[in-house]
Image 1 (cartoon, each protein chain N blue to C red):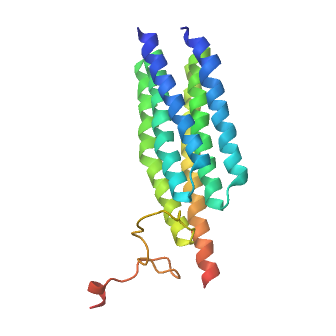
Image 2: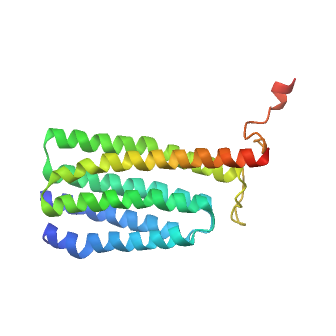
Image 3: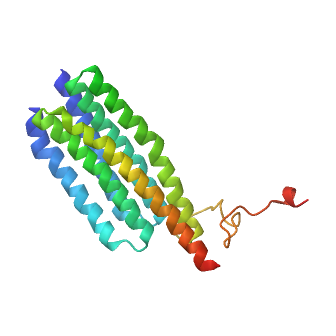
Length: 93
Length: 122
């Protein structure tokens, strides 16, 4: 039960599979909101892959990326929904 | 011993993220999809970051990871709330087996603001 073996043979394949599943929803999604949710979850899976990769390589600097990615995901979600709602409001008037 | 704790948190987070992605694919409704992906995804990534903190140690890295986790716990529900509000206002349909809808009729569809209640009218 080595950590590197578990990461290589179990954790990274499962995270990659979940990324593929999220991409299916991203291309298929019936409404635009579904695509935004899929993009949001995609960033979270990316942070998970970064943390697994940091343990695999023994390099803790990779964790710095996760803070910036979380910030970008939050800002893009809020900005997108805010302006989408505003656009619908202008269409109604 | 420490390795087993790290492995436990890593595997827990991975399985949780995988369940979140399956829920995103298979749920029948925008709101259910959002709920599944938000809750399970946040828990999974927080668990994986805790595994990194136990593996490396060190005060600066632990503070950094605590900052990331607190930021995620604060911001992911805000994003989910805005997504749900927007999708209800623009009129996305719910699943046909949904029991109750508390927000129905409380918003003005033109101005997107609250409708005045009876108390405010008088």
